[in-house]
Length: 197
Ligand code: B4P
Image (cartoon, rainbow, N blue to C red; front, side, top):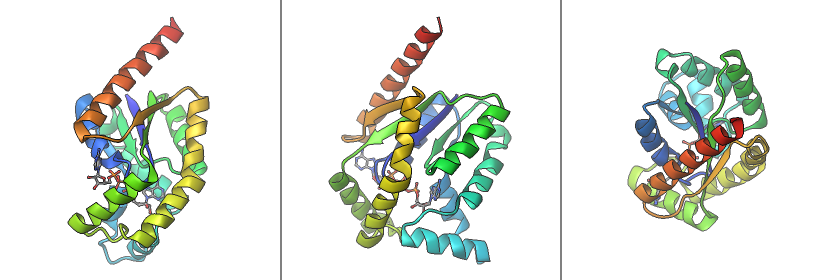
């Protein structure tokens, strides 16, 4: 099973990705987590990644596509995977399409987590207090939301036109949102199967 989860910063992607991955027995692959792990090293690449993330911008497609290709080649991805925060640009969609075509694996569904701006800003500012993530300050959050609207939101239409998009309300308790996602994925799978019969 190949899944993607998308949504604005703070929509709950990382939170839900772990629960969905556990439910389906597939690894959750978060580009944000991979970059955060990488940026603690003292190398030119790590310094570059750190500066980009602290500005609220996106790491280059070249670097992002290369680390995702490496990760998807690992054997724990053989039964499938859930991509959290990737693809984020049209070029990343193209690279993912090529990878999936080469390995004859379709995307089963793209989950779009919906949450309004006030709620996501409040969540990220709350996380800033708890975890102190350096990109969770008001100025950077504003940039992240703008970059998302310009570069990533258009991807939703791409997946909608392919019939892969599953939209889920991301507001409410974490467990409530997970239940909504599982029900929406079941309904989507059943619809897809009915279309094939
Ligand atoms: P990410 O790590 O993906 O960060 P994010 O968009 O902020 O989402 P995150 O997963 O952290 O938030 P979540 O909604 O889970 O990316 C960080 C940076 O990495 C990017 O800005 C970029 O620079 C770089 N990057 C990553 N992928 C890239 C790519 N493909 N291409 C280029 N650059 C890339 O959680 C937010 C908070 O809400 C948490 O505190 C959580 O506890 C809380 N929360 C979750 N669900 C909730 C609920 N139902 N109710 C209340 N609170 C909730």
